[in-house]
Each structure stands twice: as C-alpha cells, then as structure tokens.
Image (cartoon, rainbow, N blue to C red; front, side, top):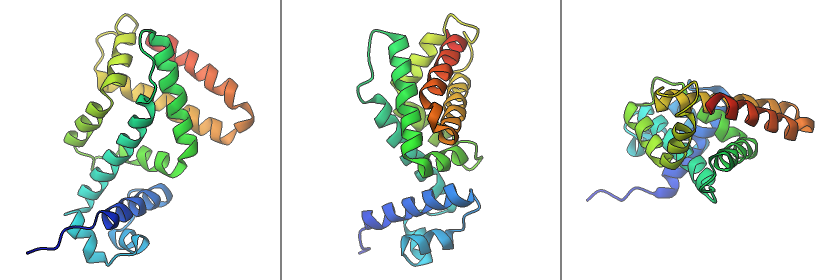
Length: 187
C-alpha cells in the first residue's frame, strides 16, 4: 500500500515554486524548487506529475488566495463601492505579498497554464467577474468577453500596484487616480 502524500511537503513545494518563479521566472528548475523546499528532487514528481502540473497548482493556489481576500467583506448593492473594494484589496494584497504577486503575474501570461485552470480560477472569482461584467454592460466594453474585461482590470491593478510599490509616498493619489480611470473605462 502506498504511503499517503504529506500535505506539508506539497505546500513546501508550492511555496518554493512561488518564490523561485517570482525571483527567476518560469525557467526555475524542478531541481531548484525541490532543493528550496527541502525535499529530494524525485519527490516533487510524487506530488506533481510534471512541472506544468506544479505551475497550474501554484496558479490556482495563488488565485484562490487572492480571491478569498477580495471576496471577504465585498459590498453588495453598490457596484462602484464593490469595485472600489475589489481594487483596494487587490492592490493591498499585491503590495503585502510581492512574491505571490510577481509569481502570479508570470503564471497569468504563461502558456503552461491550462484553460481548465483558468476556468477554475474564474469560477473562484465568480462574484467579482459578475461585478465587472455587470459594470461594463453599458459602457464601451459592452458585449466584450468576460476574460478580456478581466484581463484589462488585472492589467490596471498590476500597473497601479507596481507604480505604488516604486512610489509609496504617492500611494493614495495613485490608487485613487487608477480607480477613477478604471471606473470610467468600464462604466
């Protein structure tokens, strides 16, 4: 009978992968990931059949963590307030978790992330996707695919977060201007 997989070891592999992808990009080797996690290289493939499987699992874990933060206390009934909450929490998450943000940015544009993983992440974020689609229903983006609109929002958050990270003394003004630009582009 096979031994059960160790959840702590699996999590260590995901954390090591996140750190190395953030530091070195998607070219981080499985040997380096295993070494950083403190496990033998072959053990990585006990938990993840391929490097692509590891990257997809990491992508989903990061998306789920971000989504849980954004959905916590998401206002209802006022779309602008809800979008502002999404915007603020997402930026705060990115500033507080720079390695996660950097790894997620790399993974989000990777062709190694499967359509199944992207759909699953979209399902996690269902209420936020619905919010953005609802806001954009009467604006210039009406009728555009949800994935496209979401990509624009993600890009706006990413640029704003990076800029705030480089210019923290202007964080509030940058965040406010970015939100107003997003609101106007969607509504």
